[in-house]
Image (cartoon, rainbow, N blue to C red):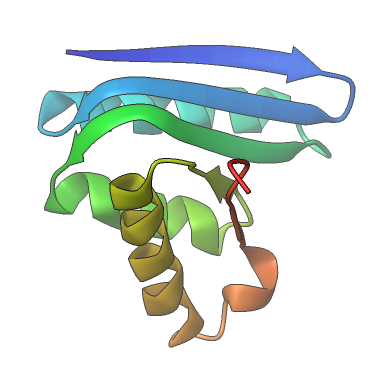
Length: 107
């Protein structure tokens, strides 16, 4: 199961993701992101992954695409933080790292 909560404030949209990002739930997150970004032009986007306990390969691919599009990925838990860092490292090999960053709010 996956829960995606969308919070829009001023110039920022944040997706708070909770549960397992796998299978059909990857498609649901992508649908939320694409539909929101098409109507919220000019805003910055972020994905808070603190509530995620598993990400499959398709979920990692979507997060990689989102980070490449400038979406900020945030995590505080060490396993999820490590996953996010791997995603961003993969993006940096494609020379898109200047558009994405990982934030550890636990420090």
